[in-house]
Length: 388
Length: 252
Image (cartoon, rainbow over the protein chains, first blue to last red):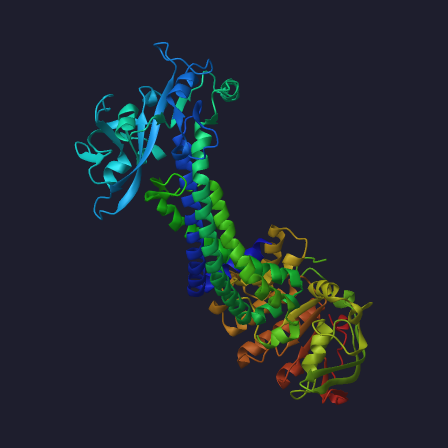
């Protein structure tokens, strides 16, 4: 039936303008559809990559985000004695006590204020986060008012550039280094000495303890060892899973927003496809009559027109997807509802999103084209031939 | 089912067409308009019949009924042993694809397909392989004298060439019966003459039974038998119109 398929394709090509306009409408819808999915996926992958496998976070029981967590000094010291934690070359546990504080900084250009996450780090923090790499300047010295900023923050916020100073916690802080953490949440953070941040913000407790597990699969054993100690009321989470959870609500919101928008738009595009296919059927009534007279059954006619509509939808889907794939060069910076901090992330195109977008385009074609195709298949031969 | 075109012998295999007490009416708004009233006649195998009559006489309706693209209200149409009025939609479609070749006034070629592809189209309904389909379609086009125009679209062909392509399409599955609705109605005199020569040749050399509706007396002259309709009734033809070579098998 390659000839019938090529018949459908050639009819689309014969009506170049109509085909281009209808497919263009569908392409716009697929573009929005793919963009929403890519954004949600970009957010997810950014936060998933933020964690390293083999790392575990120790937080207060029931904490859904870093901001909610408090781990006091005694508890932190107890955690670090666990045998499940890997040891550094000097024999000390590979663990870092960290404190997380939200501050308000003005953006460059607009001066608009936005939340930025400050992370007070321990001496082992950098070793535990191999994805973080200094690209300019140096690491802040512990015990000083020196800080380093993620590349995204340095670029977007006033005073966060190398050599500049920021004022928070009633102190002046000098940015002595810029670090790159790839497409992770850390790129949107400012780091400094945890103990300095605690005294500046008058905090008596850490936020979390980050540890490297002695064995990759040692998470359950580590959790058990902490739960066995009645003095500790703490949760243990795999670092990557924890950060992935941070994206869930926002990614869901983006998906729902994107899907609602595309659902509305797609109705318009489907009506467009339907009008195009109705016109195609009306313009080819004589051909339909001829094919039927030659002995082609109704289902062949139905199939030929459905195929034509599917090809139209596929064309729209492909164009929309191609346009959306260009979005990968852009970075979005927005507030993550769950952490209340500014987070930079990009559009990520996955094969799954690609297939889904093409399928969505074809689905619109099918829904728009089915009724006209059914009408084509039902025309009485004699009536159709009279229209020839 | 479909021996390569041109290899079949005389019309001895063709079935007779027996139209018995056929009536047909159309509903127009509130009114029922009778188109055919109790029409009966017989077409022998290998005959070339012209149906004539004024507009609205019912000749095209009769042709559509014989071709199995319309349904009788009453009566039967026997083609060979098959009563086509009892066939359901899909059985009728299969029967048409095997037994009937259509020739239309306005050729009814598919504009986006080449001449060769247009001719190949009916073969899609056969179990032939793509290569066999191509071979048969090429042979059919060669038979109508269009071997050098196979890759042209209908819009690149003259009216006469388009009608030849349509005839090639009609004969490519080697059907027993060709139905033609005003086959020369859209053609100039010379082309019309060529098309009629071609049809007469198919009737004579391949033994195809031809039923043709026409207004053109020159076209009717080529037929063995002219039947006239008026207001839905078959009227007795002047015996002088009848040619005496009704059975081409006797005149190879």
